[in-house]
Length: 82
Image (cartoon, rainbow, N blue to C red; front, side, top):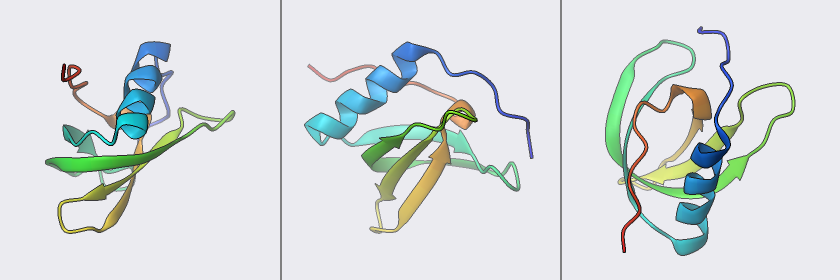
């Protein structure tokens, strides 16, 4: 498991906007336990702030399975859709 890294405020803001607008994102992230890489379309449900760490994104994947992604393990930050 990689040690947690600080997450810039604009990353949290971008993800919170996606939650509020119901946006679907193409994200590339790593699994917290195995470091396996994932790439997929997800629908963000909630940004979970953790005072002791970077926080998490709770989301649903294309199959409707809920996933929990550590914010500092997201490899890309999608640009907003206008």
